[in-house]
Image 1 (cartoon, one colour):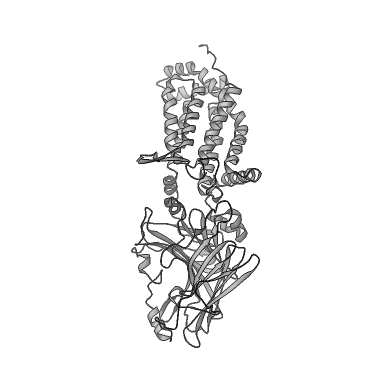
Image 2: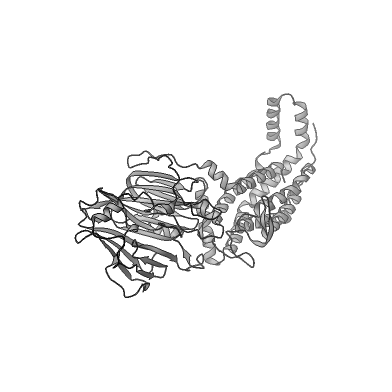
Length: 576
C-alpha cells in the first residue's frame, strides 16, 4: 500500500473520530440576516435564568396578577377542577389538561420499524409544551397560567377519546375573564396523521390585547429519547423559517441565549432532537415574526448541558378576535413525512456539509431501494458495498498499476534527489519530466480514495442521524446499525477506545492488516502495517456499526480483488 494512501486514511480516520468537534469549529452560530423579507437582530446574551423558576416560562409575569384582579376569575376557584382528556389515534396518545389547556403528555405509538416502543415527546420540565401568550394594558398573559374549562364537559377525569382512521375530533377549552370577555383554545385531531391543529380565539377581546399579534410558542424542547442523551443534545436545535428561503437556527448553549425577535413573513418554527421534531406552521396566513431561545434549566440532572430550546411565532390578530390557526407536526424526522407536511421542513434534516448533502441523499435513497427488496438494512449495506466495489474496480486496478510504477522508478527518484538536493526547483522539474517519460500519473494511486472519501463522510452522517437506521437490526448481536455493535461492557474506560468492546471493529482491523500486507511493497512501511489496524480499531469502536460493516466489507472485497487480479509487480529499472 502506498505511503501517501496510508497517511490519507489516517487523516480520514482522525477527521471522522473528531467529527463532532470539527462541525462545532467550522459551523459557528449564524450571523444576523439582513433581507427585505426577514431581518434578525441577535440580542445580547442575558443572565442565566432557571427555566422552572419563571412562570410563564419565557418572560416575567408581572402583568398577570393585575390582569386577573381586573376580571372576576380567581386564581383559587373552588368551582374549578382540573380535568384531563386522553386522545388516542393510530399515531399518538395525548393527554390534554384544563390547567392551561395544554399537553400533560404526548406519546408517539410504536408504529413502524424505527418506533418499537412508545416515545414520550413532552419533557418533564415545567412549561415545556406548546401554548400562547399575549399582551394587555397590564402586562403579559400566557395561556399556560390560566384555568380553562371544556365546552363539552365529561363526567369523569381522564376520559379516553379514541379517534379512528379517517375521522377527526375537536376539543374546545374556554377561559372566562368575565361575562363579556373570554378565550377559546381549540384543538382538532385526525385519526391517522401526525399533524393536528390548534387555534386561539378571543371573545370581545378588542381593547384587551394591545398588540397586533399574539405569540404561539413551544418551550422546553422535546424529551431526549435515546440511550446516549449526549447524542440527542448534540443534534437538538430550534429553527425559524422565513419567506425568501431564510432559515435561522439556535443550538444549545451553556448560558441563556435569545435570538430575535425577527420580523418578516414567517413560514414556520420548530424544535428537534436527534430523531424527532415538533413544528408550528401557520395555517391560513403567514406569521409576522419569530424568535428562538436556549434557556438554562437549573433543576436538570444528567451528563448533558442543562439547557432547553424554545421557539415562538408571532401570529397576526384578525378583526380583534380571530388568530391564524396553527398546524402542529409532532413526529419522527422522516424525510418523506416532513415532505408531506411541508417540503421546506426537510431543511431541518442533517445531511452534512453542503458538498456532502447531495451524496448523503443519494446514498440514503439507494439504501432504501435495497431495503425495499430485502427488508434488512444490514443486507442493504452489504449490497451497497458490492456496488461501490464494482464501480471502483477499474480505479483500483489503475491505482495498483500506478503504485507499481511508482515503486519501479524509486531508484531514479533517489538519484535525482541526491543530484539536485540543493536545488529544489530543478528537482521538481526533473521529477515531473521523469513522470512524463515513464507515463506515470503520480495521483493515480489516490483515485479510489478520492471517490471513497465523500462516500465515507456521507455514510457516517446518514447512519448517525437518519431515523431509518434507528434501532435497525442486522444479525445476532448487531441490533442497531446506528450504534456500535457492543459485545460486552468493561468495568473501566480506556481513553479514546471507550468502556465496551465491539466485534466489527476487530474484524475491520484484521481485514485492514491483511489488505495492507498484500499491497505493501516498501519494507520501510512495515511499522505502518501494524499501526494502521490498531489505530482504526480504536477509532471505529465508537462508530456506527453500519459504517464499520461497510468498511470491513470493502476491505474484504479489495482482498478478493487482489486475489482474482493480482497487482503488477514492480519491474527492475535500469539506471541511465
